[in-house]
Length: 343
Ligand code: ZN
Image (tube, rainbow, N blue to C red):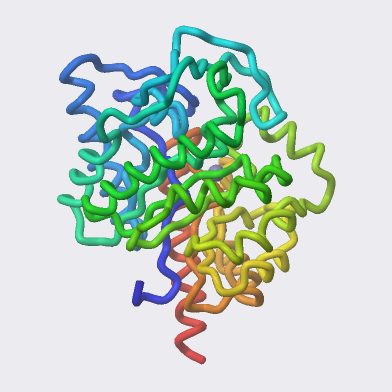
């Protein structure tokens, strides 16, 4: 990006109420058959329009064609039985009934490539596409086949790499891997998690990003956050190794967060998508609040590497609130952009 402080969102955006129940995770689709196929693409165009009207520079599909950022990708793969459920703890936080890995995992055909081509046709702005990261994928499954988290993550990394290369060929400018699990399993992240992430991004010529956050503003996450104390230093465990990795951009949570801002120093040299919008509250930030977070981040990241962003996806919010937050992000970034250019 040539523009200073290009804005983007972490990933998901709310869906229209005619497509799926609003403000709900894993919300079932409302239309069926061809109406659903068409409806998803209509929603994608609306969501793109909202981003463009708000002045967002790096746009996305807002994950309008997916029910969930992890499960929808896995549903398209071989080797996972969604009817065979087991109760598992997700990120050591809450119990959920999860599908089972019952055989070799494989990707028979592209998952999001047609959607990405569709988005590419709609805009000449840079586009970012989010995929789940290997470690976050294994964390929402019961593995009855490989019996090894590392081995399963490696297999998923190979599959993600196939998808990522086709997304790149479809014209995606930034491919982002979502790894909230990086904030939980520090030993595994350092042992093999970052290596698996690099395997997923291997050979890509477009830019690559990893998004590490404290999750959506859902109850299980807000309860977990209460146990983390006054300072959240999780990033400190993984940033040193991530700084040495081949990933270009790190997307992280900063707004209203207990993460000490100086931890960004640990990834000096990387581009940083700084979360300047809190997704766990319906209160819409003022542009000045956004600007203040960005100014603080500028102490630890060079201006040409700072990308104002949201803390996480906004799918659990109402469209009114999410659009308000997009406008605030844009306006807040513009305040700081002017300050930088006036220097
Ligand atoms: Zn997130």
